[in-house]
Length: 452
Image (cartoon, rainbow, N blue to C red; front, side, top):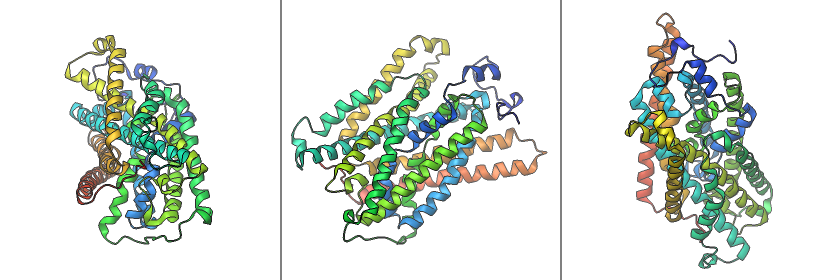
């Protein structure tokens, strides 16, 4: 099969869009300039983020390292499979976003539903990123001043520092028209995360930094504890919303390049999450904080550098999620007001700026008053299961029913079986995780990760 050929031929296309372009014309128009190895950094930067800090805590409440690694390994197989499935489905009409892929396969209602879910998810994730930045800034100023009440000084208070730094480092990156603009910031983000992982390894290897009394769990006390790690895994590996925009911007958009990008990126994320979670958990045991960097108390120079690295990395990841959410808001706006592409293009730049600024300011305001990332991650982890499992499963079911000929009975049955597994797993995890997160938040007060 030609590497540059589409995964599905022109005769397979379901003409549900209003565009009057041929497949070849759409492919030419959507051709990107980002190489497959540059795309690796964008995928890693999109997936490897705030979840890194909460992974050790997730290991502690789920019954220990072994059960958590097993659950993570099972979910990884489905996560990688759904990434390839989304790329496969995006070849219908050369889709460039997650919802447009849903439309090309499942129709307009599914597109609208997925767009609404994406807006909610990316909005909540942006709030999480700002909370992470706030925690890291507080840790930094606490180290600099050696005072617990440093936030009483207005210029070190998180409301001021988070606001100023967000305006300086995040807002200017929120107006890009295409996601490949963010590849340069992604390089720095990946380097920052690698430093944090190395710091956790070094701290684990140094017995002087280990706590004297650590309680380690070697198994779950109840069956439900196994599922407590799932929200963090789903949240941490969820790059499915941004994977189709990334794929559409790839130079030489084909399965071979995409496979290299995804496999390398997910392997890096798997290594980073597993190492940091395992060693972080064995360093602090069940006393580990929801933000592991806050567990190093008092912080030293290497920890403070890690704190600044995580803050820098999060500054570069926020615009990726905002981009995905902003695009879907624009499309919903066009859908509600029945705007054609020509009509929407008239005020596109103005609309893009208004949405970006409104999104940025509202998430910033909420983040200032939300105490911990664990609350947001638990809820978003359930929603992430829809993007990872349920929506790709719907696409696979539609392909099996409408595009796989009855003469290929084994392939048709295999696709249907896989689709049912994806959809069931997505619906089950969404319901379980969401319900469990709500019950946990009601039954116990949130852990305060803030140092001030």
